[in-house]
Image (cartoon, rainbow, N blue to C red):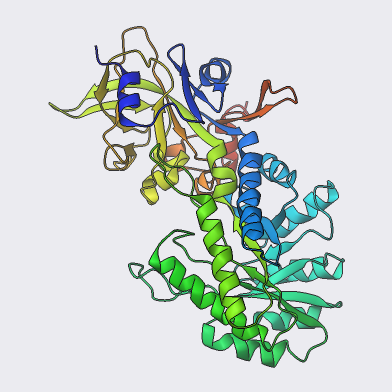
Length: 469
């Protein structure tokens, strides 16, 4: 008999650090998923908090190793991009690791205020404020600066943004400038819509920063959409960025930090092959070499990791509701959730995730398609969405089949409209938080139950039937 466990072992390098199988059932980072399902049911999302701290500490180690290996004179600072997941349990876990914050929009600033009131950050924590800013965002930033958040650094996205701060900030403050990098050749536009053009940066500094005692230039910011990858495109754009830093440093002695942005990839398949230490080494080596060539003081290095911080902590678990054979060869497993609403990147970006059976690993398997609950024809996950054909255990009479999508912790709740209205009024699933005690034992609790019809009707402006009685 061809068992599902044999297929996985033959296809992948399995088991892995994150995934093991015991007694016919999958464990995720040592957590018994069937125990979680039996207590909470499906569909459910889960967040495994220790993975967040593990990845942060790994990144710090990679960059500090590179700094030591290359005798690099600058320091390394890890910032968390809040936009990848704003949930309190995520941010609180991340902040246990002596990190800093990167914001991208107006309501990130009340979040920063809340973290300060809770004692999670101090007024010395770096708050790197990115994005194209409306007036309220700029107002909140100015208020932070006036209230003594000395390391709040608005990153200028256009030539006129600084005018607001010069008018409304009453204390000396620092700014950064984001460079408008060229997009990858296959992208629809040549240059990023975000940031200041290379040719305008020196003029911006000389006209509005250089001779103004109120403001100083702290950092130069770099980001490309394809992320930090070992490609000719990435190294070419990074080199161009370093050259601009060196040029600007000659006229801006207070400039001392290079923010190389984010985009470290996460494991979205079991075949994942990415050498984090090598990439950190090459980034540090390239910056050091270019600075030495131009007799420039080596800058401090900031990174802004979002998906890398939280992505691998997340998973979504589903039940197979029914099996449907739609013609001679298209076999469907219908799940108790929706890809469009609960894993929107799998639908909108054709994002790949690790997908594995949770139980029945000793059963025979077959090739299937996965169908979601909405009436939309695109609510599916199959071999085109997945990297390979999808094989899952055969559903036996009287046996329930559960499946899991893993490393889904970044962006999916915000893109899916968590707590709001979603396609076909599919409710947001329950969310379970998993952590470990100091002795290593697993503990878990319910963060939020499945979304209720009452909350949906209230959002839509209806009176709930129960309220009318």
